[in-house]
Length: 160
Image 1 (cartoon, rainbow, N blue to C red):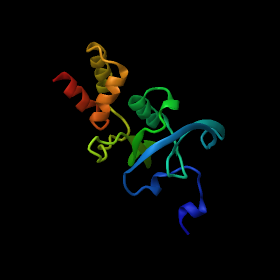
Image 2: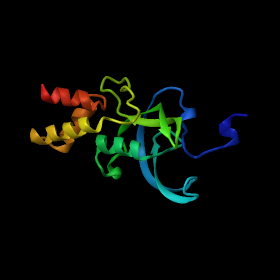
Image 3: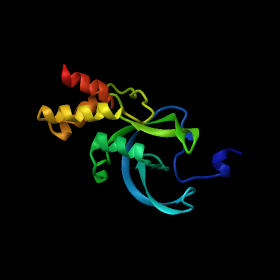
Image 4: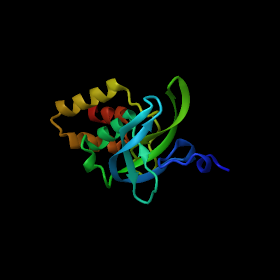
């Protein structure tokens, strides 16, 4: 028997992905999920995709990636394309496999994984440059998307 047969889940798990997968967001909904640390049911955001039966439980890192890419209103995310990738992440004192979200490169190949974390100084510097140049948030988001979600590259291009 496979683990998924023994311990079925309604959410996609990192162990179920053996390569990057490009998906289109169908919707994001709040669902009741049992939190083993809190030992109670809590409301958490879940992202579902077109042509997929399981959603991804969104942690703060993945939520922040989506906010940076598409804006803070999750109701506007359906129809947007993202890439699911697997990284090793530190969680609860262990190193575990985790699903992270990244933007697809504009040429169709997935963007490099960043362990789900852009350097906060780079992100802050990028958005300050957007503001300084009188660009809109949408212009900034477009610039990051054109660089495959790479804030450093988007900042470099903006400064040149």
